[in-house]
Image 1 (cartoon, rainbow, N blue to C red):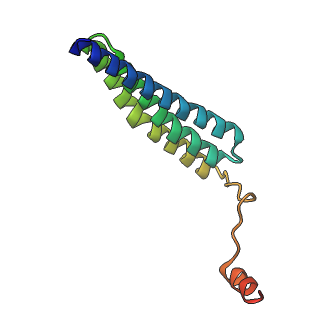
Image 2: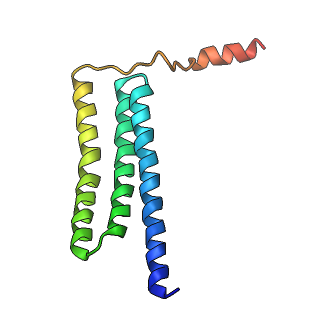
Image 3: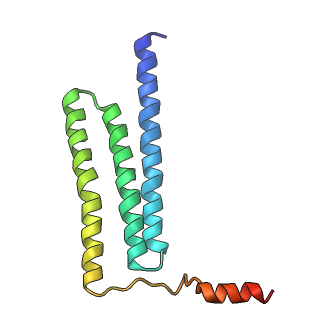
Length: 123
């Protein structure tokens, strides 16, 4: 096997691995959007996992690009996505907060420190 063939196989393995891990992140984000209880947790799941998942998929596509122009275009798309996705997520969450959307805290209500101390003292 020549060094060029070894490099091609290594590039293919890297590209498949990056795209597979990116797909796992995108699926985890979609699952989080469907299963999490309120707007803010859903926005967090969508924003974080989709940004990372899409970046990994684009990285795998850059590794498979046939020429430098395609790789450069994909890199620009990745940079644009890296900058705009978190900004858009923040803008949507901020707009929801200003509109009066409250987080659903019914699923997690920590005990007040005074209540926690009294329950431990009674044991």
